[in-house]
Amino acid sequence: MVNWSELPDLGAVALLACAFASVARRNQTPISGLWLTGWVLIALHFAAFMFLLAPGIWGTLAVIVGLASLIAAGILFMWASVPYRRENSSRLILVSLLVTNTLYVVLNTVAPTADWALKPAAALFGGLPLAISLAYLHKFNHPLRWTVVVLYSALSMFLLIFQNRPGNGADLAMNGVLFTVYFGCTIHFCSMYRRATAGAFITIAGFLAWAFVFVVAPIMYSLFPAIQIESEVWNLPKFVVAVGMILLLLEDQIEHNKYLALHDDLTGLPNRRLFQDRLASALERARRTEAQTALLVIDLDRFKEVNDTLGHHVGDLLLQRIGTIFSIRVRRSDTVARTGGDEFSVILEEPTSREDALHVGHSLIQLLNEPLQLGEHTVRVGASVGIAIFPEDAPDLETLCIAADLRMYDVKHGSGELSDRSTKAIRSPQPAIHFRAEAPDGLPRAAGFLN
Image (tube, rainbow, N blue to C red):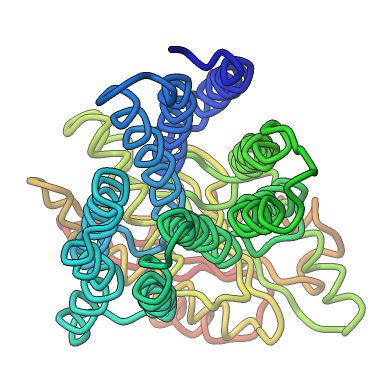
């Protein structure tokens, strides 16, 4: 016998799952994959509940499949929000929760009065996560891990107290399991999405309402049996969560698009657009505080040779490595950007001086003199660096960039001869300071020039 009243809910969840899949396809991440799997399980839950009234073993199987699917979906939603999913102990806890919940659903449905089986199964809810957490305590520890342990230990105690209660003990136990699963989702989503957005608020509120359905509904049926509430009301939080998750994916996609618009796709560094914005802000702060800001323009000298001889893949690896090296060398308050194919720019903000810029330029050149291991290849590259100081060398952004570029090109096409005179010029407080470094193949290592 088929319960057709579940068909609208099944259709609605199926449509939401399709919409979710369409959004997730544009933002394919491990989290979106786990969420999509969870919504497929929710659809399976509704499909199975259509056959609750089937006679014999088919009705029992429908209950087991429906409840196990609903619980497994919640556990996957919760695990998707765990920041340490790659930890072996995290995977073990996931498996333990899936196994213990499924086992308890089977026992509670098939043998609700089998105390000898239900008590050990109830003890496993808290015992297994606790044992795994203690076994891996010397390798990994996290407050969220212990939240799960406490939550499921409380569930174990609840089940041991109420599961043998005459009349409604089995129902109380199952509602306790479902409440724990979706309250755990609420806690994990609160921990992961600490942001004031519509998607985060709707999803967290939906999970909280979903959890309390398993508390409020039994109370309503027990205390107010004359009040008939349609099942669609109790299912409403599921749809709220689905909408919230779709909004979260869209918000993440918007943020990702913003990031791509302002960052270089290869190195992850700020691109020219973000570089210009940050330089403008740095110059404005320097004007207000009457401080200095230094701009370094760095052009790789032999990048084309690397591309031509070793291939573009090695060239990409080289750019990524150099971006990382530069980012580590400067302060967090400074900016390293990729402003061209083989050109990088560095903004040194207050406190800085011409001597600081000179020191940073020298150190970057020394770093590029070192051989870089890129897979099977060892690469040595050179660079030409031009430095301009605001406000001494230029009064505004455009002229500062032009000054740094011109000085970099002067160095790139200069003689590159190192002498005592040029060394003294580097140390002197003159407005133009340049460096040049090339691979040690009989070519000049470094030189200073004075304009």
